[in-house]
Every structure is written in C-alpha cells, then in structure tokens.
Image (cartoon, rainbow, N blue to C red; front, top):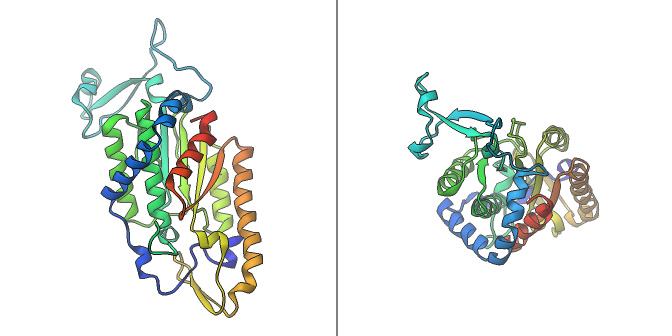
Length: 311
C-alpha cells in the first residue's frame, strides 16, 4: 500500500517548523469560531445530534419497572450533587448514579497523535495534528450544544456534557498532543448506541491500520472516519532530486526524479483512501477526506452532513 512507496508524512528536509504546535487555547478559540459560523446548521441539526447518539433506538426513560440504574466513579470537577451518597457510603469511592438512557447519548472522539500528523507542507497552513484537534473540538462544541455528552476515546471512562465535558475534552486533547501515540487506537468498550469519531491521516503501515480498523468497525457503535491529508500527500507535486523522511521511523528515501513516481503514487493513495471508505461503508460507518489547506468548516459540514443520518 501507500506507506511502502513514500512513508506516511514523507517530506522535504529541512522542516523543523513542522513540529510547531498551535497552543490549545488558540485552537479552542478557533474551534468555537468555526462552530459559531454554522448557526443555522447547528440549530437545524440539534435534533439529528440527539438522534445520533441514540441510533435508531428510542431513549429509555425511567418509569414503573424501568429503573435501569448504573454506577460509575465520581470524577474530580463534577458537581457534588451528582454523587450518590448511599452507594458511596459502602466503599471508599464516590459514585455517581445514572439511568441507562442517561449514558446512551454519547459521542467519543479520537485524534491521531502519531508523528506523521505533525507534518505540514507550508508554514501558513495547519499541521494535520492541529487541524484534527481543531475539528474534534469544533464538532464536540456542536454536540454539547445539542445537549449530548462527549469524551476522548481511550482516555476517559465516561462521557460528560456541558462546560465541564468540553473543558475536560480540551485538556485531554492537549495532553495527548504532547505524546506520540499509535496511528490507530486500540479497541475499547463503549456504551450502547455511542458514536465514535476517529480523526487522523490513517497512513501508518497499511496492514497494521487495516487490521486495527477491522477490529474497531466490528464494535457495536456508529463510527465516523475523518481522514486528514496534507495537499502534497494527495497531489505529489514534487519534481527533481528530493529526499523524503519518515517521521515515524526516521527512514529516508532519495528520489532522483520525483516526478517519475507521481502517477504510481497517485494511484496508490487513491486506492488506499477508497479501501478505507469501502471498509467503512460495509460496516455502516461513514468516511470523508479533508485537506488541511481547505477551510475547517468544509470538513465539519461534511462530517455533520455525512452523519446526518446519525448526527
């Protein structure tokens, strides 16, 4: 597949500025601005957003004979009124009591933190990592505005809503951005009817990515794959003698006539992207591709409209 031809995030040297990260405070402000620029869509999609995390199942509300109570550990920063003191008195742990329907409306985000995501081909555009974080935060802002809950997949044990849920997500994404992570997440159990949004370039070793995604799409959740690519990763505009380096392994490849590989490269990257899309389609997931040189609003609209059947 593609990674064997030109490693994920392969780039011209030197590009020391490629590892610069936009401060999370700036990304959060930009994310709020992107979300706020879609007021009509946000209002129109509020009902869809609520239906999204429920899937096709109606919300189960408490009633006679319908008390589906669940307990989870209390998280620092949550209102003290959420604590179930009777249950907590039986142990040294504070517990929060929730009904099943209260834990069903959740959207879980995962943002690729692998080294290839730090790539950007131009100094005046976002790195793939910054754009992925921006889109996750903007989408989360709309989800929470619709009354739902959010969490970072693989980090949080439960989802949360309101300003607490958003601030917790911002902090978790910021921590994640400062540590390298695998190019695809490990499968973790999620609540029934949850949504899972994966944002990354998905350009690791093809066999590894393929196997990991097959495990993820087998989860009983609605999933959405948002693939972030730098424009040169789609267009391959290089000519002449150019050295590429893998940010994942440090491996280098020197091309005397880079343009000679443009056609074969284009065929393989398009084939890989189509493969990801087909895998998602067969599993009932959605898949979209976003170039980091384009407006983040276009990716957000694409994500929300593609998942409109579910988001």
